Structures are given as structure tokens and as C-alpha cells.
Length: 168
Image 1 (cartoon, rainbow, N blue to C red):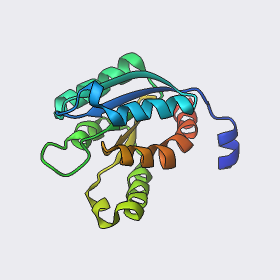
Image 2 (cartoon, rainbow, N blue to C red; image 1 turned 90 degrees about the vertical axis):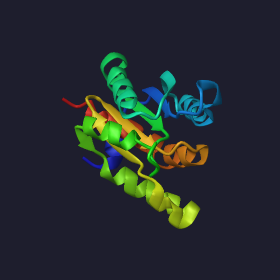
Image 3 (cartoon, rainbow, N blue to C red; image 1 turned 30 degrees about the vertical axis):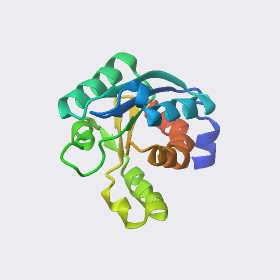
Image 4 (cartoon, rainbow, N blue to C red; image 1 turned 135 degrees about the vertical axis):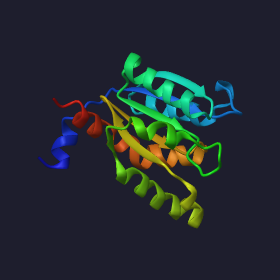
């Protein structure tokens, strides 16, 4: 079955969880998370959760596990903690939870970032994977990076991805 046929029959109104990783921002200062929520609504999706979690492996892992098991969103959009500083531990927290990895997401995000920020794109460790019946995307916390990831990659394919992971 071709991509166009898959996209023709994909779900449209999805449940989204937005999690921002930060030790310095509160929910009130979470510009990236707020933008993701607004953009999800424009796409016809419902944000079922928006919160900020601290930059600690166990806190991130526990929150993602809780969200997958108790809220069961179609997608979790996680921003922040994807860089290379010692406090950036999002990737270490979530990748052990992945049942499948969407390896092309990180590659494509890096390519698109390179077009915008040149060689600094090498510092991003954006990644995505499947946990149960949810897809999780990890992107940098800057609003510019969130817009790039969501507009260019995540929202255009989200229904298609959810269709596949919902199959029996």
C-alpha cells in the first residue's frame, strides 16, 4: 500500500502530551510547550497533558512511563534536554523505553537544522521512538527548534505514524 493511500485513511484528531524538560523553567515560562499546544490545536489535535519535568533521568523516565501507562496519548512531544551538556539527559532517560526507534527523525531534523544553523546542528540529539501505542518525539527546547521539528516532520506524519502503531 502506498504512502498516499495510508495517509488518506489516517486518524486526524489525536491526543497529544506535551512535556518540557527544564530545571530553570516553570509551566508559565514554557514558551515552547505553549507553542506546541497551540500548533497541535491548529492541527485538530487535543493536548491531554502539558507539564514541565526536571532534567533528571529518573524523573523524565518515570513521567514518560506514567503518561504512557495512565493517559495513553497517541503522541508525546518532549522538548529540552537533547543537547550535549552534562545536564542534558532526556535521550538517556527515554531511549531504554523505546520498543522501536524512528531513526530517520534525528537524521532529518539534523539535516533541516543544518540548513538553518550550519554546523551547530551537530550538537542536537533529537530522536523518536515507539513506546507501547504511543510515539515519543524528543526535540531541543528552543522554540525555533520546536517549530522546525513540529512543522516540518512531526505534524505532517503524525497521523500516518499513529495509523501504523495502532494496527493489530
